[in-house]
Length: 81
Picture 1 (cartoon, rainbow, N blue to C red):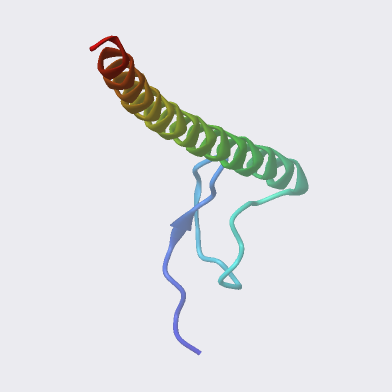
Picture 2 (cartoon, rainbow, N blue to C red):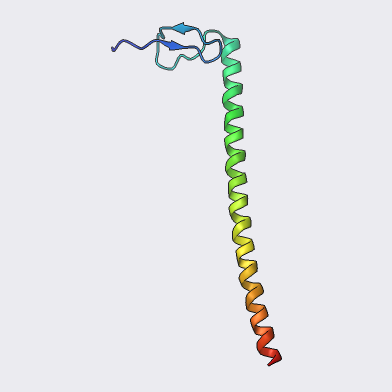
């Protein structure tokens, strides 16, 4: 097995040599804190993606409304002639 590199714990930032590749905390309390941080990051990323999608949909809606408005104006002008 390859020698695993030195790492820092994610919460308390102390250096260690992990016994396994998936070790990222030193005690259960820090594991819980790290899990809460991951959950908060996942929620924040999802919120940002939803916001970007809503903004993109709003832009498309305004463009469609502008096209329909110009078409209706053209038809109205034709009707007046």
